[in-house]
Image 1: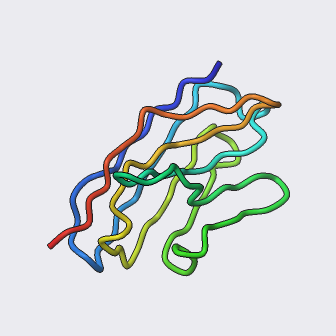
Image 2: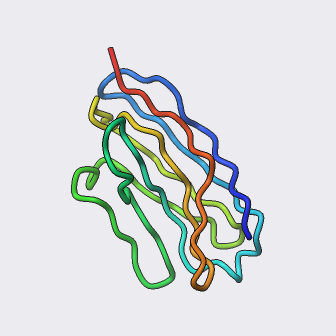
Image 3: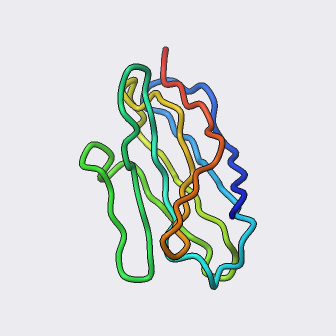
Length: 114
């Protein structure tokens, strides 16, 4: 099991920025990958960004605007979101993969609106 604590969501105007952070309760040595998913109203949950020791991937809609970063010494991952658009509005979930196990945080709301 892994507990994930997220922070940093909120309301921002289009074109603005937000930074999401997530801390996992498990040791960094047991974590294979960390990332972020999001789910907008009426839509399926989608992968936003994922980072592991081998690579980092982004969904096409956020490339060039979002940056995922992971502290190599701590079990933390952040998502810097710039040039936010109304279509980025969603609940964002922190994600961790440990072996074959998949874990998500409780979610944090991001609303982009004028």
